Image 1 (spheres, rainbow over the protein chains, first blue to last red):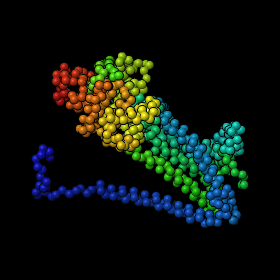
Image 2: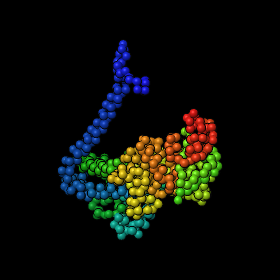
Image 3: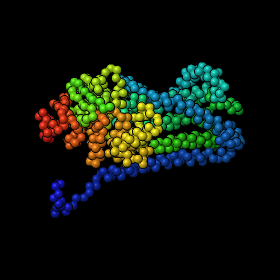
Image 4: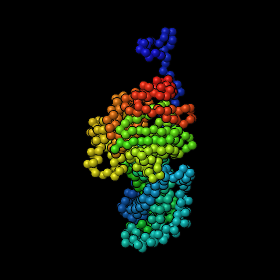
Length: 329
Length: 258
Ligand SMILES: Nc1ncnc2c1ncn2[C@@H]1O[C@H](COP(=O)(O)OP(=O)(O)OP(=O)(O)O)[C@@H](O)[C@H]1O
Ligand SMILES: [Mg+2]
């Protein structure tokens, strides 16, 4: 068609049907896909809501019959009426083991990811990345076995040494061998590959232009990482950490295998070298004995607290990521 | 403080591929030199060897010498980080740090140099933004993300970032290729303003731009596809555009070529 300013005839040439806007399989495909995506989304939301309602419906009657403060009590006695159960010890054990795991795994995971993406020579980077991805897929029962058979005896001396030198700090008061501390470290090893694999993925996607911008200003390699790679990867690292934290909070079998239970009525201790039970390990240890609705309800109430805990953690992560959003587009 | 660049028998490689062969030229201080030539003939590659950004590419290496006021940039005792602090660079596509504010983008280079003094940072940021003709547009939103600016503003932000560290040489790789005519003029004015203080090298596909801003023009060409690029000639811009020595240059300038 001419673009030289000759007036263009807008009428369709006579004798010809005005062409219709094509309506083809494209539109239908759009509608089909849109419909199924909406359906899938609705099902997921409905499922989550149903799970929540189910937990609440089972937990509330049991909590109503509870003779002690559900959130604050350290007792867990559901074998005989009246029920006396509280989650303070469980919350402590769950949170402490996860914090230990995160404190160890996140910095190390980020460092390993940076090593693989930025420092390792190419012949090493590829196999290292594949190894990490492989480790992320190892089932937790394997970590549990390894933790019991190999790691607990191995950490024993370290724990004894910490206990004898730093024992005056309540956190390090000497206690058991199979402690929260050991579980924390095993959890750290379990989640390390997750943090590493996901961080490596985001770091490797840092646009070359950002890195070159930093280098051209005279940044050293580490300064380039600080100005270009880390800020770019930060939301990804937070997501990775949250995924890992979710796994640590909910990890069942490895914790159940390693952690030694506390004798009923044992005094409160701040020590990391104490035994105990996490939400998940307590429930798993007693899953065979859900014989009365109240008893089951008590465990479900504990599960509900774990549910809320993970939910809150994820919400906080979302908020942090949202706040950065204005700067990442 | 502007420095003179002597390139001597420079060949540039990407792995085993020789991208540019045997370039020799002299770039005078306080002048603007334009690199022109068809796509893929190695203009960006040569430019990036002048501040050792070429070796950032895996497999990138050079043979020959690049002398900055007589010191070989590729000498064994020379730190590439130091070179890049002396020889600043503006890229073809605007690349402000997306997670940083406008202020922090401009201050980034100073911060790398360890400057913490707030007053000094403030002054430098304002001076650089004024230098890049951007101050009036952004002075009320220095704390907003740099990525929120228009493409032309982002490019001037990158220029401000590059001149904030007061380099002695400023390399610009097609700085206006993503800009509208008004921003392009602003950048060209800026180049003219910066000329008395810096040595400037600019790659451009825009002949009028080369004719407008540069004192000297270097013409690069490929003898054939897959062959390394060569420097055909470098001379005063008026000479290159009116009366070039080489036939290939004349063909290219008059549009009778690739
Ligand atoms: N990262 C790289 N790896 C391998 N070869 C490259 C790389 N960058 C450029 N080359 C090659 O080097 C040659 C010169 O490229 P260069 O980018 O310097 O051209 P140019 O003159 O800047 O082109 P343009 O005008 O299109 O920007 C080309 O053959 C190109 O394919
Ligand atoms: Mg180029």
